Amino acid sequence: MTQPMYPVRNDLIAELAARLEQLDQLLGRLEDAERQAADASDDLIRARRWQEETVRAIQDERAQMRTHQRALDDLADRAQGAVDALTAQYRSLPPEVHELAVELHVLQTAGLLSRRGTRARRI
View 1 (spheres, rainbow, N blue to C red):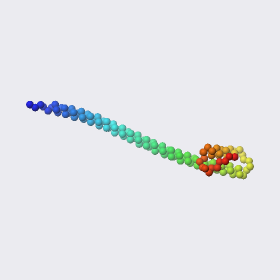
View 2 (cartoon, helix red, strand yellow):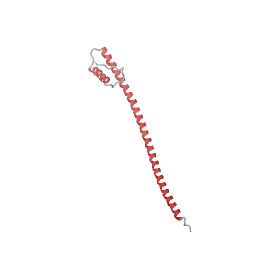
View 3 (cartoon, rainbow, N blue to C red):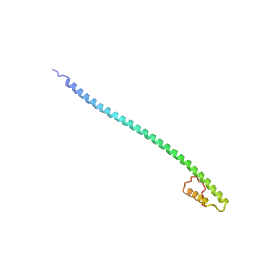
View 4 (cartoon, rainbow, N blue to C red):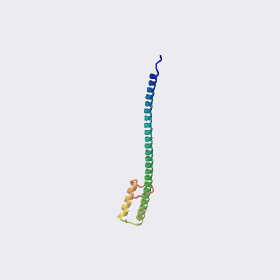
């Protein structure tokens, strides 16, 4: 007499069920990894956008600072020209003109005027 095939079949079904459970766990881990990768990708995209916005803001600020620097340099040139003209024409000058000359010199000495041609003299 031959033995029935049921015990072998039950073993195969149990092994198949165990492997299906392992595959289900692996699939769950893979889905978790995909979600984490998608989240990381979103984080990278947000970080890149923030970086680009920051760079644009810095560039805008630099442009504004250059504009302000040019305006300050132009004003200092005009003020120095006026001081020079007054000094050349008059023997005595009001104290405000002397103060202006000193302030221009301080700005120049402190490096706050970017033009090398800016003429700041002591009076």
